[in-house]
Image 1 (cartoon, rainbow, N blue to C red):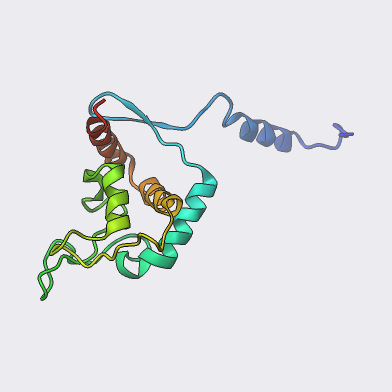
Image 2 (image 1 turned 180 degrees about the vertical axis):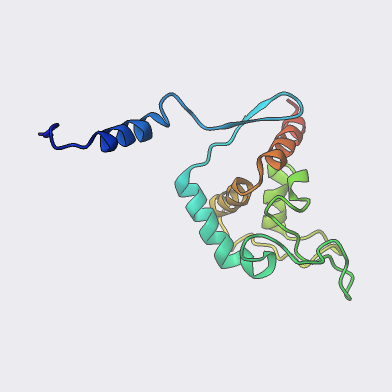
Length: 156
């Protein structure tokens, strides 16, 4: 039982303020240029799996924070593009989810990059998780632009 005479008023006020922060709030939405409300909601277990997959299989090429190679827009001496950023500063947000998953599963298209195929190494769940993880790191304006493009790709 709480002895209210011993509880400091500041502690009660702080507890009420913290408790009230999330009352009635769902996942935050991002308004897109098309006027959609793109709700950014991620499953914590899926994000944890995605981060683990990224750190184990992707970070060596795409960078610890998904920053990609510094010169990712320029072909290397062999004529291939270096690993692009996955943190929202590259072109990854120009692609629908299905294409991102396909790129991970099947690797770079011939002659464009050195991305290996992860089919048979990563499960479909791991591929989906890593895509969700790096999308969760995109800034809201990038996510909003991707969301509009994704809706068009889905015919919505």
